[in-house]
Length: 246
Image (tube, rainbow, N blue to C red; front, side, top):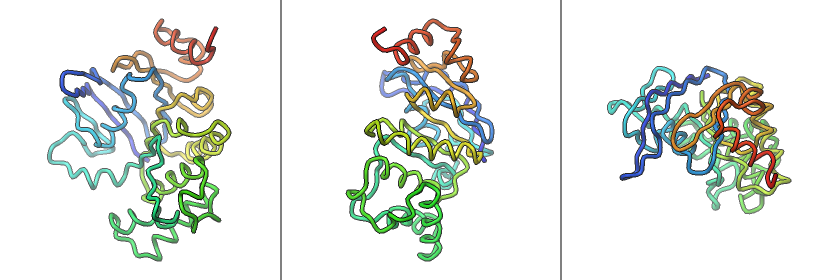
């Protein structure tokens, strides 16, 4: 599984500085949950780690590859990084099987039979082996998100990034997606997860990172950060999330 090393990462969009000097290490097999208010830079940080956004300054290293080096082959680097978005981003005109095999065949140059075998294995992993011939419109939101996870896993990533993967789901569908993510964590997958699901962060994360205004404010084991935060800003945020209306 992959490791991540981020040093003094800054990201600006025009005059707006979104990330203001992020330092973060993620060990192999670690599950790091990024929490914090909207606009704090969590999703931008993930997109920089996957090189979907280029850093303004600073360095990002995944395993022995420095993504911020202009000579790095980003397409090759991304093959080892799986990303799951808020929206499922499935191709509506392709079946579930087609969605999971298309990148395998075009990017990894796997044969159709090998790609379909891999797709079947990953669909079984996320509990959807029987839905391979369905189209996205025939699936619930939770099922579509699990297909998106299977699609990412089919590329055999060493690192999985999740950007609020349950935020677009009806509450009753959240549990199935989180169960798949828990299973991945149990299997030792390195994961960085942007989430508002504090119970998931408490139960699954090895570390919780609280971000605000483009900075890491507090980091530590879930029991410490979520139960006994040291910073007033963390405490205020958690009070609003865990006890709304209090």
